[in-house]
Image 1 (cartoon, rainbow, N blue to C red):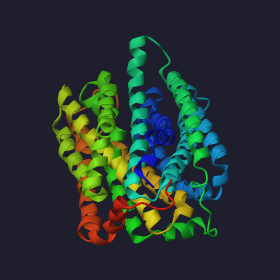
Image 2: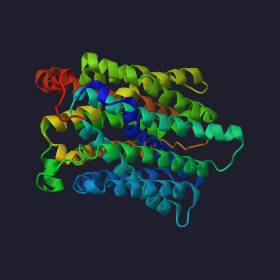
Image 3: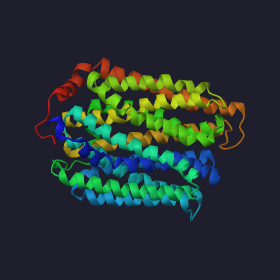
Image 4: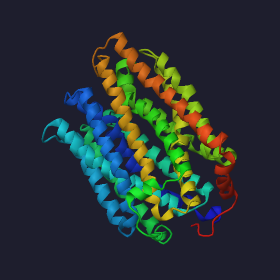
Length: 440
């Protein structure tokens, strides 16, 4: 395959679906816990336990979603359409109507939403891996997809500020309207792309191994990759769970939450090309390591912040946002390399389900660890807190993620850059300089 054969327009038709999916993820994973804690007076401990159960359920079902997606790929359009409808309707129900006990309603709507979110994410990533076996182009495909995802997040974090300036009421109703509009446009583009590439994207299944056999058959290199990814994601998930608490209750800047998130995600969008270029020069593993180092150096300063340190936190958001791009692009691209290296294209969704499983486990671990710790420290969201409670919030928000990121970077260096560099990078280097005869 020549580089010109995957044109930017075609990449955009594929990647645009990531925008509404990521847009939905913002209220689902960032806003919902704080919304139910403040609007419905649910304790942080109860929320932490509920989120742990929900995310463990969500994580466990991911391999099943991947398995059935591989076996029913001929019905992909129906699967994606139904999942999109469920995601949009459950997001609307989560924030706009509560018909039963708030905690029970929260659990039901979250379960539906995260399931639909998983189906869309797993299949989108899997189809990107099937599109080509060339490692360099895999990085490009992942970069387009994750850039659209970040654009969706930028729209989501900007929406509350836009609504407040325009005087429009019903913030969460507008979230639903924008989500439905984005989803409709994205699905039309995605289905057009899929129709033009349907032959390549539907590999023939060789037998029907059980989902457990697929999981047990994961290669050692893939297991190491997933372990590093889990540690790194857990480090990133802790600030995601606590960002509203940190900005509102420690920095005293609730009105600037949207601006800080915008700086973070917009930096990820603008510097995505940097990581793609560095990966072509140094390789994906080394580039991912560089991003982890930048994340640690930039984010550790958050522990030193106190009330009113707004521009300092803004700078931290920009630098850590720059590092975000590689965290999003490199793991899916590296997994695609593993899939093609070991000829596992027929079970591609099952393998990508393990990647999303790690994301869910990371969020579950983050919520289960940090929310009860804050409860133990007598921290109360959107209230006056003691200095010791705010110190615990600051330490958990800033220091714990840096420690986990350091462990992830050391594991990445040991497993892939130091010990197995020649063996693991050989396939990637070959694909950087050569193509595959069946590439799109």
